[in-house]
Length: 259
Image (cartoon, rainbow, N blue to C red):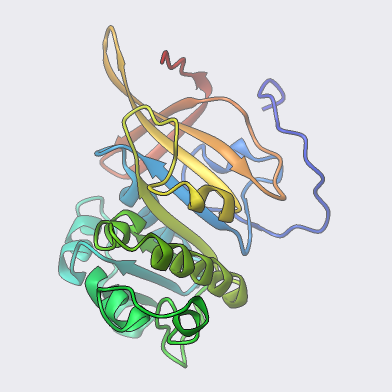
């Protein structure tokens, strides 16, 4: 790994989360994502964003971690079925309460937060209503996945002020939980912006970008750690594959993306 250029950032006393995804953790000098970070997982359609997050959840469950997966698009059974297609049987973990899957209608989030879809109320009133997501009182997640932020903004197109407040509260809420959080964001195939509003990029501690790149020999999946506070990491775009067993990253295979 000495050949891979690392971003040089101050890093003292940082505890890391080893995702267990083959090849991914070695992209970091300390072999993992800084714990307690809020990470934006960005990419176009079909790049493997949800699979990436679910693979981390599955691996962490086997390390006795508690995981919470909040979906705004798929119900619990579809998520369990999707994970089983990679050989990830999470039924026991779901039954025992170790793996909590919540399906939420994004419109319900807006109604809870802002009282109506009209977006009335001052910023103070809006910020004092309810928490951005609901965690059961007896459940302290080590990992939280939000899939996806894109679904929330799609339901709040005309309410930019409300969405900004919601995002600020959401990231503040994550910091209070001390969980490591992954937030899925849908982008263009070759993005120049990595979230719907651009606000998320500044609030997030890290940004992991997934690509599906057209090459002469066909399409190739790739991954880049664009940003990671408190973590020294590779600055290159490297090959990634979605296999029958999930995500696999190849740190030594550089991918060149032409704009």
